[in-house]
Image (cartoon, rainbow, N blue to C red):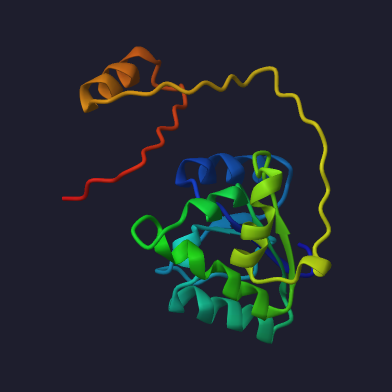
Length: 179
């Protein structure tokens, strides 16, 4: 076991099981945060953005820090912080508070646009001169991206039926209807 714990904040719940599987294949201890469980220190704890800023998880972080075990936060798909609004995943806007924990923070993204960097840095509440940005080209030949606009729910349902159960589809919407 390592000397401490890294907290991975993953906004896409669908990726959490995949991430856990990859870590475990590499021999790294990893658990998905569940507030109903007691955790012995693990190398990696995966949590949603909403859970990362709630009181129960804060108590867990306090315990890790008290034991000098909290090493860092890693934000997977950090560009999604820019998508948060008062109506859509508003707790993501509070993630900047984690900088007050005084540990290393790593932000991972393949899609943060240059012109959005100042807004992103403001959201995460750090000074621009304290940021080190590493950029590199990446090629993923097995991944295809496309944007298809639909106006009605039935078209989305049709598209979901078109793909095999193991296929991954991300649907972005400019509005959310809640019931």
